[in-house]
Length: 103
Image (tube, rainbow, N blue to C red; front, side):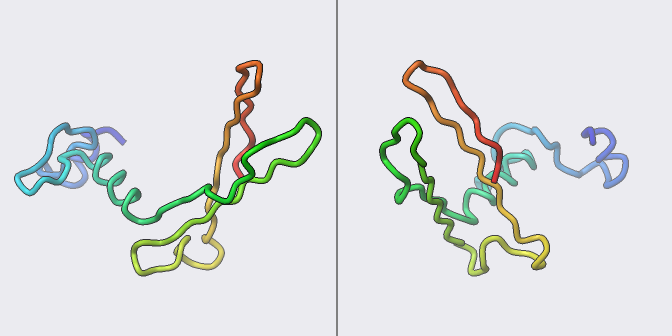
């Protein structure tokens, strides 16, 4: 929805999604940046236990650990909505990118 449509529905003081800069308290003016800050503060994701080497024809295991920083479980929500997707990309020795589907 465009900024004009949001303002028409929610009033002229509704913040612009892509507004640049920060307010007097140091918070981003734009809603997109605010959402990104909230998501970044909500969880820490680690790949530290992932396999470090791969061999042709063998399985390469990516182990993802997610820790919630909000005092709630991660992922949160109703049981049927508790899904997190991880998209991975790897680079071959020939500098080609291989993108796996989100799982």
